[in-house]
Length: 303
Image (cartoon, rainbow, N blue to C red; front, side, top):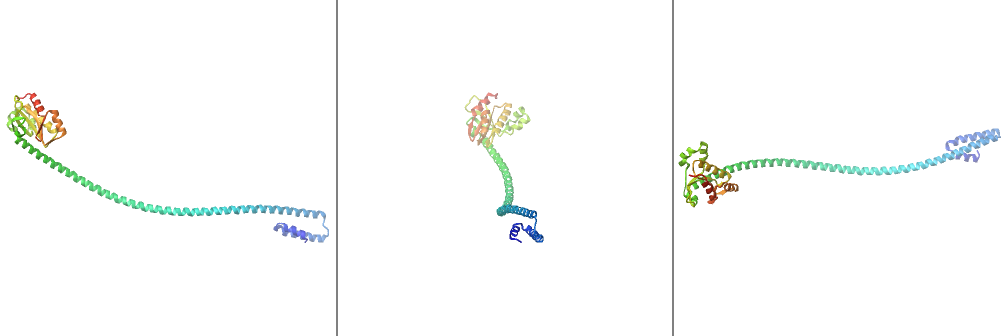
């Protein structure tokens, strides 16, 4: 085989070299057998070889392009590998963060559990407190009722003491405004009262605390008068209204009656009521509205 054929065959792709080598050997053998080769056959062979060389060139160019593509692919793969590495690192960081989050959630869950337990304890304590408060309120209510009963009893006792005092010492209390002032029992007036009053009026009048008889000291021409007195430790509106009502009942029996209230203290409402109704007020020995009450009584028809 000549050196030029060998170099040409080496330029061909490896898969073609063997076939081409066999072809050349066959040609050489044929040439040796025939000695002369036709010019046309030689040209055809050279054309084939040239085409094969061109194909080889294109193949090499394609291989170069594929090598470049492979290089770019490897570069891209490297980039993807780096990105994957960063992704895995980020995933690892997220996993650690998730782990810390789960640990924090577990801690919060434990804290919530302790809080709920504490709330339950506080709720139970609140229930016990409310029960204690309820018992205290009940005790206070009973104590207030007891105090109210005791106060009412005390006021009643004090009122009864004051009644006896005003009745027994009528002249001491009322002698300044009445001559011959003395306490009178309704028993002494019963015949006249029964003649003029109904049973209901009698029952109401019998509840009058004190009845005092006398003559107005600074009015010599005035007739005898009667003080219908309601006595209370603390005088209020109701005492004033009762005194006026019972004085009106006595007037029906023909007596010149002045409604009066007496006590150690008086409420603002009781004082206003006495002033507006011209009711005589005796407060802890001090006299109020006497002239107004007397004038109103004298303006009535008195015997």
